[in-house]
Image (tube, rainbow, N blue to C red; front, side, top):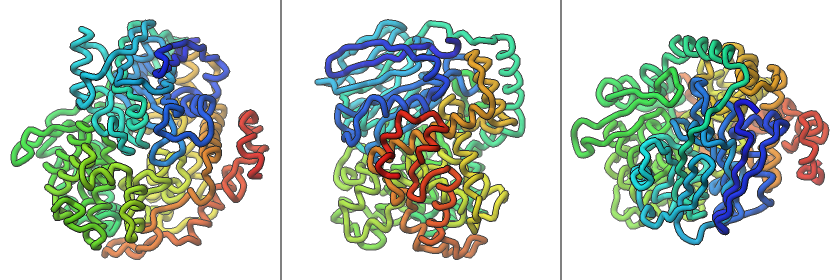
Length: 617
């Protein structure tokens, strides 16, 4: 096959045995790669009901068919898939940088990590040589330190490393997996799955070519995409970066502030993308094969956190800034840096700190619980301290490291109503009380609270629909983007590049065909996106999910937006949510309980998984 390596590596950490299996063309075309292939391998290699932190939960690492090529943004990605410790459903997280390209050049489309090592190890993949190495000396180190030590002891600077930090080792359910020092496969707690296997790191060196089927036509298409990436479709990412969202969301009254108490932040100017770039950003860098450059590296120039450096994106900036009522950029950068150091999902971490602050403001947590910290909204020093406590699992941080859903259950006293999550995964930076198209996308997302599974916020924010009401048929728009996003994450092209595929599925199908030589039409690719979304739904149903799991945070459904803004008074009632779900399920071809029908499974060539739903229809 072209594009694909045609090989799946299986690493049993319990026995130390490694084996190779073929990736057949039929499987490759049916699930593409990335999260599509990963979810299918998860279903095929796990039994229902396993504990996410048990040796029986496989951790699956995948590349895409474009990985390792010069495809802009598509040549450098990888994905991790496993049962999520936060949601007990599909856990998936993508990352870019250089690691994915290296794994593909080593000759692998996927790696399945099974079992649990007796002691800390790292896996060293050097083309066809796969070794399980002692990692006792790496335990306790940050992902960045781990990468440096591995490169030094193996004597090769060009080795690429994905590693966990202390959070993953201590099985924090918000632990992530860091590659290339600043890039994170961030969401769903997959760093804890890695830690539960005593797997500290994965080191890769690949020297093989990744041949493409039609090199001349592929190169011409790459040139076209490079030109598009220099144009208006990516100007946001090349200039201010995603922090540009702060002032946009604030002006629309959809910037979640103080744990979704407000939708407008009075300190927005001080944490805006404009302020960040003017005073803190020192350079903007790009991933392997990328024509955009979007990674805004910020350095704190003065004050108590002087010298702190971190890559800053909108979501963590929002989570530690407006969401916690903090308007100090130096403290936000410090909190993000600590998340990188400990290996924590910065979106979840900031969400949880805001939750703890809300509990403190309402007397549910006291100074006895916080170790003497005055955990009111806006206390930047306390926010930074709580992030450290979570990273080390010390004091209150030990509870908070369980994720906002479990932390609320442990704390009790009504804390649940302040826990903003869907399916156990913490919310992201869109106040969906006034973004009702996005709201249905959030509710049905198979990995929980996440804007990147559906992208429906764009319809609301751009004014393409009335964002304050949900009309019959609106779900069709959400589904179209969902299926496109699932293909983007299976090819593993960066979502920041989505605007350069002017013809959507048609451009992406052309990309796929030029690289792999496997003929793919736009309609076939759209249907493949639908197949993968149904596949993820089947996995969650297998793990016990029902319609009730397609919920929204309590605050979103009980607290109208109070601010004097265009979105004042907006929130989502149970009646509205039920209407949204009915509309969405109908357009998906599912039952009113959200179960794919046998007819739908046959249509999508998923009949072999019909056993999952037969007793629910």
